Image 1 (cartoon, helix red, strand yellow):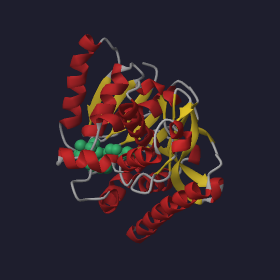
Image 2 (image 1 turned 180 degrees about the horizontal axis):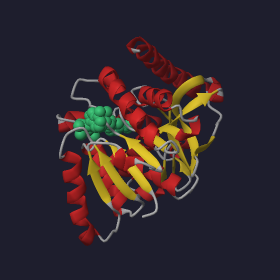
Image 3 (image 1 turned 180 degrees about the vertical axis):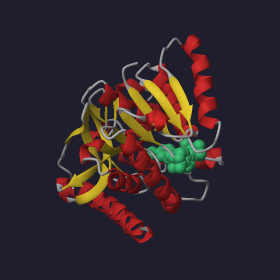
Amino acid sequence: MDKKITVVGAGNVGATTAQRLAEKELCDVVLVDIVEGVPQGKALDLTEAAPVEKHDARLTGTNGYDETVGSDIVIITAGIPRKPGMSRDDLIGTNAKIVKNVTEQIAARSPEAILILVSNPLDAMCHVAYEASKFPKNRVLGMAGVLDSARFRAFISMELDVSVENTHAFVLGGHGDTMVPLPRYSTVAGIPITELMSPERIEALVDRTRNGGAEIVSLLKTGSAYYAPASAAVEMAESILKDKKKILPCAALLTGEYGYQDLFIGVPVKLGASGIEEIIEIKLTDDEQAALKKSAAAVEELKGVLAKLG
Ligand SMILES: NC(=O)c1ccc[n+]([C@@H]2O[C@H](COP(=O)([O-])OP(=O)(O)OC[C@H]3O[C@@H](n4cnc5c(N)ncnc54)[C@H](O)[C@@H]3O)[C@@H](O)[C@H]2O)c1
């Protein structure tokens, strides 16, 4: 392959991301983890599946960073996931250290890479990686909105018994309990769901979306979701690698857009070869603005925690 993606963290999200990237034959994949043998073992296992899956992507597993040199994209999934009863924000102390260290290693070897953050708490980890990499803001982004909207789409399709392919959904804000699903921009075959469902049913789906991560955590008990998160990260990577210029909700650094400064928050962006090529500003109703403000305040609070952690 002529493109290379490094996935840091060979756990549930990282390994599934590597699998999807290879099976879509998007790029060669380097899988990095601190646990000896795990990235090597998973890369070898995926390589042995290649003849059956019919792809020629090369997969390499490593505990170091030399193999990552010259990556086009780096997807950072390293860190701990939450367990039942934990919020994403409870992970901040541990994951901030991990993400800072990982980003420094990556930035030194792939100074032109585009970073896609996955580790939680997502918006705060984007701040950590942005500062540690010193990359321009178009090359640091976070995966959350694509996952949150995929969940919303899945629930809409289940509710109305229609193909998921007919659904579109729109979610703004931080990745957490304050995310802001936008029903009036969520459609089935172009028809806003506000014309297809009662306000009560929409509210129920919105609520399930907001708690979508926690629902999986409570079922799995030993970790958090990874199939849908990996799919979401790969959709973002594909739009960048193929310069598709898809409009996707991603955590992006706002510098005045939507009235916020120096804050990573989920907004619709155009994703192409140079990363974030445009932040799309849409008109929000008073209620939506209030919900976004709450979401921004939650991210701002985590920025304060990061400052204390140093
Ligand atoms: N943004 C989202 O929507 C979203 C969705 C799902 C999971 N997540 C987050 O992604 C992260 C990973 O989740 P998971 O389910 O894959 O967890 P996991 O425990 O299965 O995998 C994490 C991996 O990171 C590795 N790791 C830890 N420190 C490292 C370091 N310094 N360098 C390299 N690797 C290191 C661990 O050894 C482990 O293999 C968690 O923080 C989780 O909360 C985010």
